[in-house]
Length: 365
Ligand code: HEC
Ligand code: HEC
Image 1 (cartoon, rainbow, N blue to C red):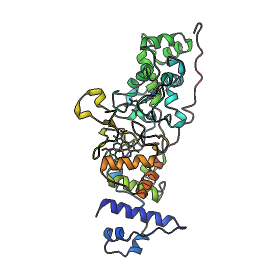
Image 2 (tube, rainbow, N blue to C red):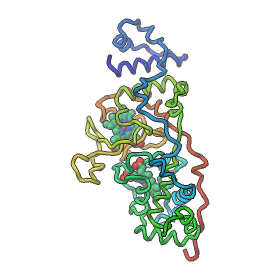
Image 3 (tube, protein in one colour):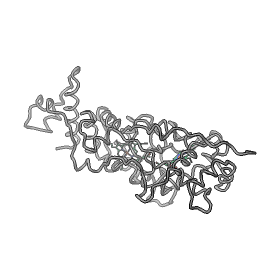
């Protein structure tokens, strides 16, 4: 049986059983080819799909409480608290007007909502700001994967001329040294270090904080075995997602974030200006290779794609099916997938992301 037809049938069956106001039309062709023996009416009245192939389901994982590289790498509370301060501190930017939180607003699921980010002096960068939630668990950092970890990544934007635009790491450290509260906080967070206030430790502390940026969702309860938390419509969307093959790339704990893949596998990506990983390696085989984004919280993190070219999630799903899989999805399939994606929206860690009191400027700043 054709997998898509099968999925569609299940979806229709699922929808018709829950909407008592408007009876869903019965797609006779789909019903016939899906189950030649059964009369159409009987198929439509079939119990809605309440589960998915368990083997496929095992390719996803519930999210961990904290995203440490390994069990021995757990940061101290002092490092996490210092990292939180640095994440919110605009004094890490040249004009004292931008913090990490400016482009990765933790109260807005870690994004800025812009097509591409606005950095120092109001300049627009060339890429869309990805969310910092769960970024610590990804295989690599940045759209082109140029940083190994969030600790390494964090040292990038502070010095990026289009972002926070500080001249160099030494200058950042000099500024922080003039703030007595930071001198003390670095000493507490890195007690074994000869030189606790170093640029590397700025990255380590911010990374320590980011490893706790996790948003458990209804989806996690479903994966943990509570099959009642997803509606039949959501399960219908999930069935489409797995049957179509979206799951080959968007998989694992973050429904993405685990591999680098080509944008435009079947049909070339419309915008070829940014060549992705090729910009880093200059190898032809890396043209248009981007990190597969996580789909957790995706309903909240538009606009979409590295170039911010899709305004809505519906559009992003349509473009993905077309360019990655060669499928033209009808609107009802797009809607079903988008409905399921909503179940990946998690709960913000309210107390963890409260903006901390920042240490005041030292004398002469
Ligand atoms: C001016 C806006 C801006 C500021 C300020 C900024 N970022 Fe970003 N951030 C971006 C953009 C845009 C990208 C994507 C860039 C790329 O992939 O080349 C990004 C990428 C990231 C990523 C990678 C996420 C992923 O999924 O690969 C992390 C983590 C991150 N930023 C954390 C930070 C931290 C920590 C700070 C503060 C030290 C910071 N950012 C400051 C805009 C910003
Ligand atoms: C061959 C791998 C692959 C397949 C299959 C695939 N994707 Fe993607 N997906 C990607 C990559 C790579 C990106 C980033 C593209 C870019 O920004 O240039 C992406 C981006 C997305 C985004 C945007 C996320 C964001 O934060 O910007 C959504 C939504 C999405 N995919 C959904 C889907 C759906 C739904 C399907 C199935 C219809 C699918 N994908 C199939 C690799 C894949």
